[in-house]
Amino acid sequence: MAENLAVPEPRQVERVSRLVQQDLTLWTTSYLRQVAVVDACCAVAAGMLAFEARFGGNDAGAAVYFWLGLALPGLWLIALGLAGAYDTRFIGVGSDEFRRVVNAGVCLTAGVAIVAYAAKVDIARGFVVIALPLTTIVDLLARFALRKRLHRLRATGACMRRTVVVGHPDVIGELAAALRRDSHHGLSVVAACVLGGNTPETIGGLPVVGGLGNVVDVVRRTQADTVAVLACPEMSGARLRDLAWALEKDGTDLCVAPALLDVAGPRTTIRPVAGLPLLHLDHPEFSGAKRLIKAAFDRAVAGTAIVVLLPVFAAIAVAIGFGDGGTVLFRQTRVGRDGKLFTLYKFRTMVTDAEQRLDVLRQLNESDGVLFKIRNDPRITRIGAWLRRYSLDELPQLLNVLRGDMSLVGPRPALPSEASAYGHHMRRRLAVKPGITGLWQVNGRSDLAWDEAIRLDVRYVENWSFLLDLQILWKTWSAVTRGSGAY
Image (cartoon, rainbow, N blue to C red; front, side, top):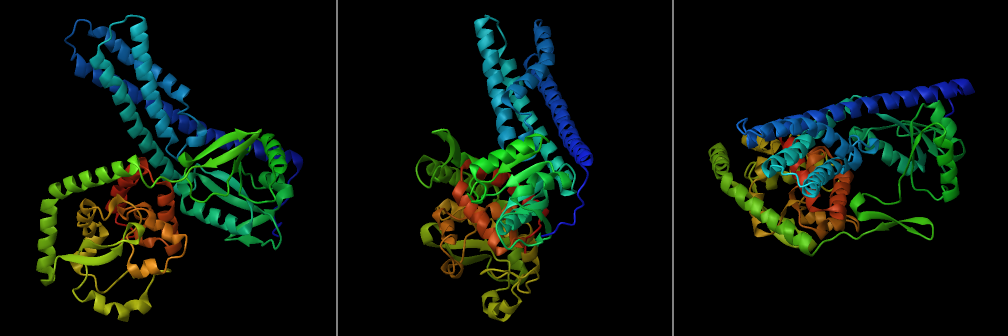
């Protein structure tokens, strides 16, 4: 076990711990201050716009609403504070921050309506209907921009929480790799405390500097401000409680990861039973009203998109046809929901005899799974490379969505040869329809390792919801315009 970290004096430990907490408090306070200023500016802008839209300065009683618009920022900040929109736990990650902003908007609107009714105050409904929803929408967009800015800072190593991970080597390695890859979560793993025997000196370049008995000492020596405890049998309830008490003295945050893989928050609830906090896991919903809503949304969007994009379809077809005179569409058998086979449509991006050349190129495969992928595939045409870069070759799959073979969002549609090689957990991907886009599309596309792509597909299946589909569709635009990972 690596013990090359110098042991500081007690006074030095106390001073370092205090400085670490000050640094953490400094950037979180600064960020929340920026958020509050942006919130207030959004409310001012929305109030003034509502005033101009409703009155245009022509109404004699408009002066009251002018001052009401100026008072809106204060009311909005109070509503956000009561809704918990400034909770440091939600800085930079998850949808809870945005959900709380929406809750603040709904509650403030309801509160204004109730107070006006109770006090018998005649408030112009047009002003309220414009001002409060507009404040909420503008603030959501502004907070999203601030979050993206924070993610860019975290990509450079700034605004991170120094984290010590406690658990077994295999799960520590997986977590450390995931946090390095997804820096926007804001956790930088600096050391590991390993449980069990056969303790290595490092785990994926991460130093192992202790065990369960000296977590607090390791936290102080590494100047960490967060401890993440992974699921392990050695960490009993009593030990976890004692660790929490010890970390409380220095103000160090404690996170506990349950033994659940890729299960989103909405599927889990904590229910106290006989004084024990039991984590209840709901089953994913693959049928019922939600599935019907998803299918209706998919077909409505696909049908509209086909009509709107007809000129684009025609231009691409002409470009492919003039390129080599071959067919415009590429048809291929893929595996759909519950293993049902269907014909997938794409714009042809390869030479006409691409399938016949495949055996010759198999030895150049760069994929680490059952997929065949090479970055500079000689079979791809010049127009095909451009279509692939911006995923325009996928547009004909809107026809598959309209026919009900595919969804807008879902796992990547697999070839029969790939599906036949699936293990038990991989077949979970077939529980829902494949999609034109998905978590694999917005998290790296072809640059993803095979295991990671499968994990993302299974994660989507386990946690799919209409809101998640909308989030993925929103992120797809950014992934496509960047063109990274497409080949």
